[in-house]
Length: 327
Image (cartoon, rainbow, N blue to C red; front, side, top):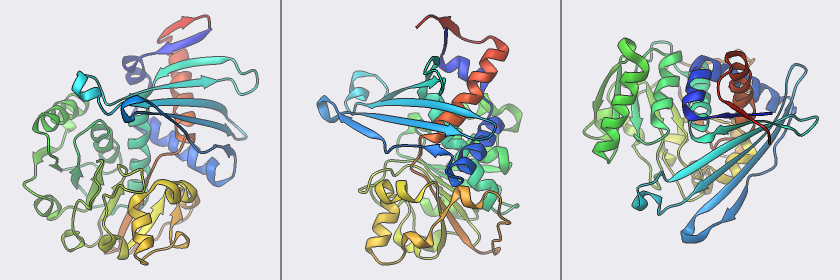
């Protein structure tokens, strides 16, 4: 029997602290070469759409997980009144191949993407960081704030985005999720306004040009850049990367997809040897200078899905959440 889990089911079964803990498992295993993770396969669709297939096998001394995520991006969907993308995650038994669960992939992806930013923030952000400049108010924004607030309780969130409706939807979601602990939220007039006094920056956009200038970045700032995932995209400019310590989720993935870093490489200001992989610093004594700027660049890797889907499945079985069917 396989368990079918909806978005509402996932929200019952997965907390942000548990998702962040799952990211520690995933990236520790990645660093230890306990993961098989082929490059994601892209299948072109009509109307410039694409389907992405992301398999991963995670094998540690305490955990075995096999997952396959399917994401479909259809650029014309917003004109149809539909979400830009849909995603599903299959969790399989790695020994028998039996389907254990089929999960709604949009919320799972948002949670694991937020969680890895939260993990990087916990490792690299200053302990006194409590003001966040957030670029973007789309599907990823809410879990980015939720994750950062989990590890660095926020006093204020300043949002820079283009769509007023998206901004108000983000505010409503955060207030519903965080309740009385929700920080003050306001829409910033500009990037300069958002960054004034902010020691945390989070970028979750599809920008093709840098979102802010290095001159506006406070000394000691930590930056999460999770939106740009093609060589043509860019959120963090070369001027900022020139002065920053750079951490990536995986060097090979960044070399294929991280437009910010590829453009900085082309300008001659960084090389892959300069980048630290997240999994290799998890158990290290991370030393940072109070005024050092750190940038975590993530394009997302499939082992994140395997790790967090396992947590969801175990909790769903414990709580008897979802619908069981014979597949």
